[in-house]
Length: 343
Length: 256
Image (cartoon, rainbow over all chains, first blue to last red; front, side):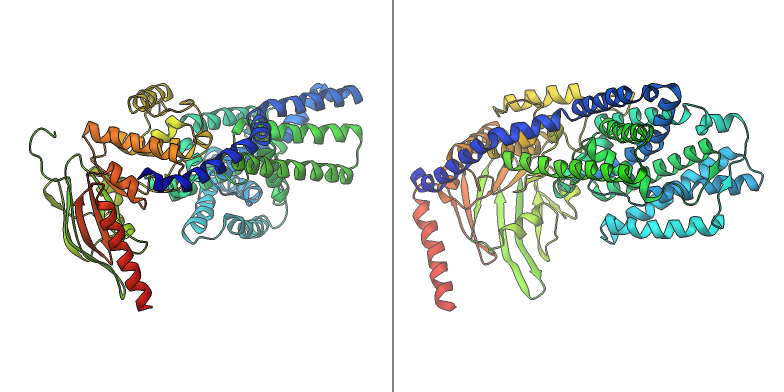
């Protein structure tokens, strides 16, 4: 009886073996690069720091490091939310516009004579509502999040310009709140680090994090075991939007003004690039918050270093664009190699 | 539980299911005894997957009744069927490649530390390891991601997960499909072990009659939305099944 089965199955077996043989080199290289992702970015960062310090002694001066952290902080906070979204298979292109828009809530609340704390909370609630819209349109109307949030970019930019009249507004000075919320020298980077730590714990050690990975890794499978995939996605859209809004608030407190043209697609792109450089898979299912933080840090080191070297902004954009493209290609290819290796 | 004369694990009576003008299930009656392994065979389009979807509560029948443990039930949703102990292992296995073996084992039923909403990885790891060892499912490491496992190991994990979640009735959708002989025998061993334990009753969909006859207690053949054969598995059944399917094929070929 068993003989009936044999020819077909042994054919399959040899096929499996052939694939296993091919797996060898490519897969082990891919998995080393994937597993040692954070370590390799740290090395890249250290090499860059040594290079820039050697080229210009001012690189590690207090002022320069403070600038570096300023570049990195807000972008890191946005990247944190983008990582959660990318892992569950979505992205938010409107992050930079939420960043620009919601601080104005604080301005108008303060104008009405209400505490800025209330303004901050209302601004974060508005961020969450925008995230809810992004998520609901994506999940229920089945519009790809790339398109949903692309549309949201223009909508939010328009609203920001309308309510501000196109001009920056000054952040009211109330003292302690300004210091805590970003005006203190290292306030913004402290917030960023705290958020990174908390969100890495959420991702690695909570059911929410596990279900986010499951949603991005195998959405059908996740829903078959009873995970509410839609809830996970919408939740992460809301989370990401709140982080974007919070980053915008910190930034406006730091520079003491709210600019309807701040952030925008530039900061969103930096955040996603940082996440991807840090090992978050563009196809979902994989990624770490710490990696994204390191990725953003590398981008900021480049930015700060090239500025000190006097490289023109145009040249810098070209270099950065190439670096990001290479990182994205590696990101996609490594995953494909690994998947092919494991059948 | 098997000591006392227990009611049948599940019983379907005169189940009918139509999709518009198409009648997928004409009149299906089948039963599954406690601890039994029932093989469900039939051509593509015979209605096997419709039947499975009804038992898992994914779709509702247009007629007939379902009894679980002797109690008539209406299976309105997958969650409700699951609460009655009906678990399904689909062909896609519903495993997440990126997660470890133990996280997959506990997916959606994670253990958390009491005082903090954090995952209790240590407990999950230990319990998953112990359980898989008791089922003699060999895996390289409990910490390995599922992506690193072979097809047979993945199938074994998916089955073990379903049983571990307190399944009373286990539906296996082609557990031996696309698997080499060695891998297949691994799964056959696992099903045999479940049978020995006797605390779960199994309906297994399969195409390979040889394997079905080897592992199942009883075989049901589904054709054109009704059960046309219900016999205990025995080597002699092979010819009868082949004959029935061939005749069907000849009629079909002549008709078209």
